[in-house]
Amino acid sequence: MRTRRWLIALLCATMTVAPWAVRAEGVYYGSHPADDVYIMQTRAHTCTLVAATMMLRNYSCQRGTPYEQVTASGVGNFAWTKQYGLSQDFTIGQVTVTSNADIHDCIDKKAYLINVLQYHSEGVVIYDTGAPHAIYLFGYDADTDTFYCADTTHRNGGHAIPLEESIIRGKTQQDKVNTIDKIWYVLS
Image (tube, rainbow, N blue to C red; front, side, top):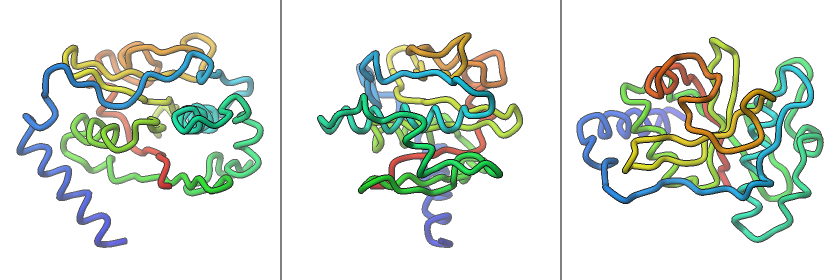
C-alpha cells in the first residue's frame, strides 16, 4: 500500500513538472458513452451508486456485453451499504472496482484526472466530500480543454455535459476539479 501511494505521489509530481504531456492537440482521453449508458438518481443520497452504475454500464458496453442489464439496483446488491453508501471496493462477477483518495493531496488534480482517463476509457466516479456529491467523469478533450461527465441528478442528469455544468461545487471547471477528493475506477 505504501508503494502504491508513493507511485501515485510520484505520478502527480511528474504531471505537475511536465504539463506538456497532457496538452497534445486533437487528443481525446476517455470515451463517448452510448446515450443509454446514462441514468439518473431515483432516490436521494445515491449519487455514488448511480455514477458507479454508469461507469460499469460503459465498461460493459465497451466490451460488447449487454450493458443495459447493468442497473443501479443490481450494482447496489454488491456495492451498497445503508450505513456507508458505496463500498470502497467491490466485485461484480469478474469486474472489480476500487476507490482512491490520493487525488485529495495531488498538486495537479487536472493532470491526474487526464492520466486516469488515459488508462480507464470507461470513465471514473469522481466525488466531492464537501458537497457531498458524485458524478460520472468519462472524457477529456485536449483541444477545448474540457472534461465531460454525466451528473446523477434530475436537473442535469441523463446525458453528457461539460464538467463545468455539473452540480459539483465551484463556478469553473478548474474550481470543480479542485474540490474532488476521491475517485472510483474499474481495477480489472
